[in-house]
Structure formats: C-alpha cells, structure tokens
Length: 442
Ligand SMILES: Cc1cc2nc3c(=O)[nH]c(=O)nc-3n(C[C@H](O)[C@H](O)[C@H](O)COP(=O)(O)OP(=O)(O)OC[C@H]3O[C@@H](n4cnc5c(N)ncnc54)[C@H](O)[C@@H]3O)c2cc1C
Image (cartoon, rainbow, N blue to C red; front, side, top):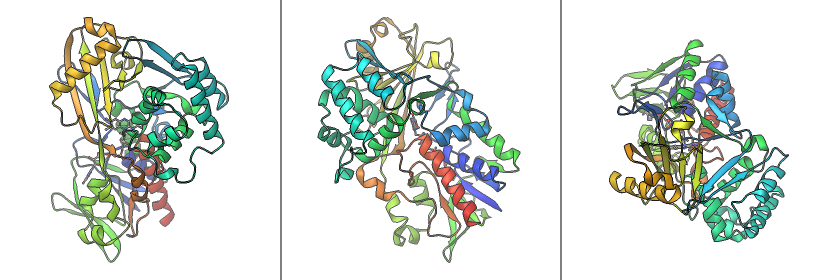
C-alpha cells in the first residue's frame, strides 16, 4: 500500500517516517522547493549565517519529537539542558535565574523557585500554591475551561506582577497568544507536562544547528531508504473525493495522482482550500476548520560589531520583545549574532520593519547596557503571519481528529486535535497519530 502525504513540515515528515518504519510505501508531496514548513532554516545571503525562520525551542517533555529524532538519527543536534534553567532580565538590566535542581517532581521546581532571586517572597508563595494545585489536579475547577490564562491565574491568586514577570512570558512562548485571550486549559496542560512532570521533562532543548538540519534531510533520507519518495515543488490543488471516499489528489499542474490513502499534513487554511466545497459547507467535521485564526510571530535577527551578552537565551521582562537568543553562541559561530522574538504579535505585525527594528534596539539598550555601545552591522526581520493558530478557549472544539468521515483521508498538523498548542511536539504527535490510523484501517 502507498500512502500519499501532502506537506513536508514536521507533521508530514513524522508521518512519513512512521509509515516507512511500519513497512508502508510513502509518497510525500511538498508545494515549496524546500521542506520544513514553518520550522526551517536558510542561509542569510549577506552574512552567510544559517538563519531559522524563527527560533524554536524543544523541551524534555517532547517525547514524540525525541522518538522521531532518535529514529532518524539526529537527536544529538538538539542540546538539552542538564536541568531547567531560565534567565530573566529586567528593564533596569538586573539579571536573575530560575534554576531547578535534579530532584523528583515537584521538588525540582519548588526548590528552584525558593532559591531563585527572580521572585519576591510573596511571589514564591504564589508559585508554590499554584504548583500544589496542579499536583493535586485541582487547578482547573468547574467552568475554568472557558477562562483565559489571565483570568485563570488571577483566580488562583497569582498577582499581576508575577503574571507579567513569569507566566505571561511562558504563556506567550508556549501558546503564541496573549494571556488575556489564550486558553487556560491548554496552558494548564503545558505547565503540568513541562514544569510539574519530571526534571527531565522540564529541560529545554535548543537546536545547535539550523532548524532544517535537525530533521529535514535525515527524515527524507530515512523515507527514501525504505523505498519511499519525497517530492518538492509538487503543489496539491485539490482532493479527489467521490462517494465518501478519497481517491487521490489533483496537482496544481492539473495532473491527478490516485491513492487509496491520503494523509493531509498541511495547515488548516490550506486544507480548507483543498477540500471539495460541498464537504467544507455541509460536513460538520470539516466546517469548523475555517474558524481557526492565525497568530503571528516576528523574529528580528541582529548582527553587532561586538558581543552584547554571554547568555544562551534570556527572557526580557516587561519588554515588547520577549526573548533573546544568542545565536552566535548557540550555533558555535564566530559572530555577534542574536535573535529577538516577538510572539503573539497581532498588534505589531503591520508595523514597518524600520519601526520594529528601532523598538528592538531601544529595548535591548535597556536590558543589556552592552547593546548601547555596540554598532549594528546587519539585520534581518522575519514576519511569520501564520505562525500558529490562535489558541482561545473556543478553538479546542474546532480541532479535528486524524480519522475523518471521508474514507481514506487522514489529517495531521499542529492544529489538529492533539490537546497541545501548535508546537513541534503537537505536529510530530499528530503525524504519528494519523500514521497509526492509516495502519489500523489497513
Ligand atoms: C517563528 C516560529 C517560531 C516557533 N517556535 C516554536 C518553538 O519554539 N517550539 C515549538 O515547539 N514550536 C514552535 N513553532 C511552531 C512549529 O514551527 C509548528 O508547530 C510546526 O512546525 C508545524 O508543523 P506542521 O507540519 O504541522 O505544519 P507546517 O510546518 O506548516 O508544514 C505544512 C507543509 O505543507 C505544505 N503545504 C501547504 N499546502 C500545500 C499544498 N497544497 N500542497 C503541498 N504542500 C502544501 C507547506 O508548504 C508546508 O511545508 C514556531 C513556529 C514559528 C512560525
């Protein structure tokens, strides 16, 4: 049996690897000339540096992703911390750290918080209280499912200051949405998985190479080694559906490819364009797909004439820019290259590149006095308008399962019903789930 996979991002490649591993024939079609989708890297023509479309972090709790990278042999390209350590900078330049020791959960977080200079005594008690509620499964009371992260945290006694200095930064990084609209239930799950499961799961992993080098070539080589095909520049224009059965795809060239099983691993808006109109209008399973709204991320890559920090990465408290990554150090380059990230960037996405660059440089000067002395050599700003879907409480009910009412059609993608925010782990899990559904049905 050959399975046709549409889309060569994390979800499509993970599905391809899982199906190949199970002895299935795979033919993967990607519309772009390159694979990687929303998680990829490319060479910056000016500096020759490898640049990601946006900094990506992994975590120890990314179990499916770790399995995927182990299968294709590239797990060592992601550098995992020994124990969770998060640095924070205040606008005044004050640096603090939350370092979690290697103790059984939840003691690793609790002791880390108690010993950290990042919080006041009262804030430490607030965090311990939330940790206790999460441990006792009491954090999501009845009716909490409709709350925003901000409302939920406020109900649980988390002060505005602590939210601004800790939870907001984590929420925006994990959910790519402002805490005043982001889904509390999803954030609670993230906290439980990432902070309160085990010290291993809490560790952060940073790719030590360009993002594409982490998985694209190795996954392609794996699929090909099992006899599968991976084809770029092959845009699918529509799904061929008749009598409740998916029978293949129509390419943008007009060519048709017949297949018994089609696994779509494209974003939600791309799937909506591929579905026959009557299915989208009349089949309640597919209709909600069009209501998933995007949330943007802006990444500003900056090359200076001197080093501005020796940290790997740091959270910027109270800034428009939220996190700074020391790319020169992370990638082992002899360059003073940093990248700053602005997630959940709805309000900023229409601002000009010049304006955004000015804001970033001005704020960097507050957080890192060294940045004021440094001269900017080069910059590259990347706006990802459709970085993720926006995870409000309504969206959980809109996310479809891998198995669809159309026989032979399966769905994967970070936006499908994974129970996770739009992340690499969600994408990889969705690919595995869809592959499993194909195998079970045959
Ligand atoms: C800037 C940025 C930062 C992020 N940071 C993090 C992070 O730190 N940690 C984390 O876990 N996640 C992060 N994410 C989210 C993560 O990148 C995504 O969740 C993940 O890459 C989604 O993978 P996917 O396979 O579901 O979709 P995609 O990567 O979008 O792949 C879909 C593929 O389908 C192709 N396609 C679409 N339509 C067609 C068609 N008609 N025919 C053929 N091919 C088609 C597309 O070209 C694309 O290659 C970030 C995302 C962005 C944009």
